Image (cartoon, rainbow, N blue to C red; front, top):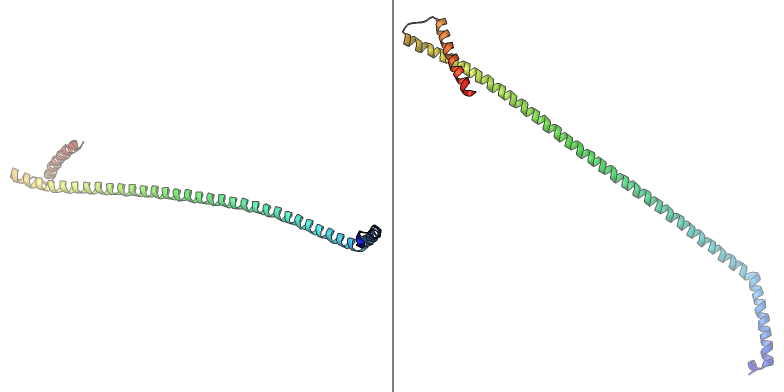
Length: 171
């Protein structure tokens, strides 16, 4: 076998080294520079893409924080508006309650005044009718006619005595 022959083997090694060196020199001169340049360009593009992705991530985080801050502020504003609306509703409810209470007090006072007026009017009518009745009774009892002024005076005295007795019982 010729490949195991030492004389053949040493020349084979020589030509392999020469061909490898020639191939390496050709690759170094013509192939490696464009390949290395392409690798460097690709490395630069990847680095730029990573840096850009990092910038975008930082920008997205910043915007997310701004959004959360705005959302939080909007939530606080909404709570404040709701609290003010509740306070205003409570205030209006209390004002309406006060107004209705004042109105009911006024109506009660008007009613009490009207009742008192009607009571006095009724008492006056009763006095008047009692006076006339007392005059008739007195005329029948006495058997003679008194003057109108005498009748009135006697009736008024009797009514005043009855009214005083009534007032003493009420007190």
